[in-house]
Length: 259
Ligand code: COA
Image (cartoon, rainbow, N blue to C red; front, side, top):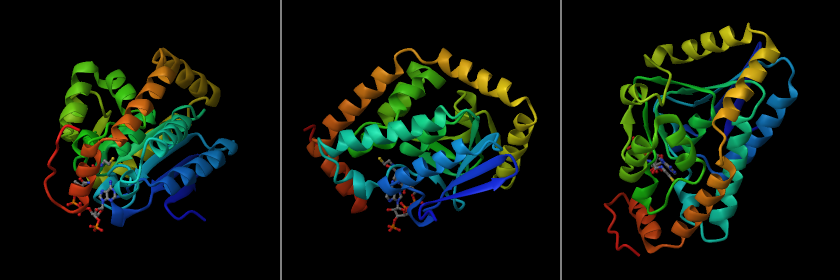
């Protein structure tokens, strides 16, 4: 049914897997649309109580947006694509049921942005998390600049986004970016146990509690997201974006010019 994702149901728990392991589960535009369709099904299923989001294979949760598509983003498509991602990811954040990101490896760029719209995050000891966009001459565009400071504070968010360097799972745990770190072989079981615990609580209490906690962090998120998309789109017009992406694809060090 889907080409880029898997959606399975285990009793009251849905498991949504980004399934492009040969591309490190990089999220392309088609994956975003499939995610949206999967969310329609999750929303329509009254038996589901918790969603687990993970990545296929052993290396990556999601290693970012598909760089081959980001390469072609310009001032028109940059805005459309970032706004669409923000919309679909926000839909996960706003699901009536809680969600758990089971971070099995690299969670970079849009991967970390996806993990951050989940209600909780569990990481394997092998996970590495980061927002590497500046290394490609762009900036996060699916919520990273807005949700990261809310989760870990402005100073730490600045360091992660401005260096572009990833952090290890234990560092992410220390700054509250993930709730727990477990051995890779224990990751899915830990996520399922947490999901089952929550699924045993009263459905509406969980729904209302989740909504209340979300509202506490709202502030001017919609404005922030719009501004983020605008700035990402500006970055799409720079020479350094072209160079950053070309260098990655050609497996060489970038030569940035500041233009
Ligand atoms: N988009 C498209 N393809 C990607 C990708 C992405 N974000 N991340 C990895 N891939 C592809 C690689 O190009 C490679 O494809 P190939 O086998 O056809 O050459 C394949 O996935 C395996 O990745 P590779 O880089 O060889 O694995 P690695 O173990 O050496 O490094 C990462 C893993 C995650 C550190 C590295 O792939 C990486 O830095 N990815 C980009 C991260 C990023 O900048 N994301 C933000 C995008 S906006």
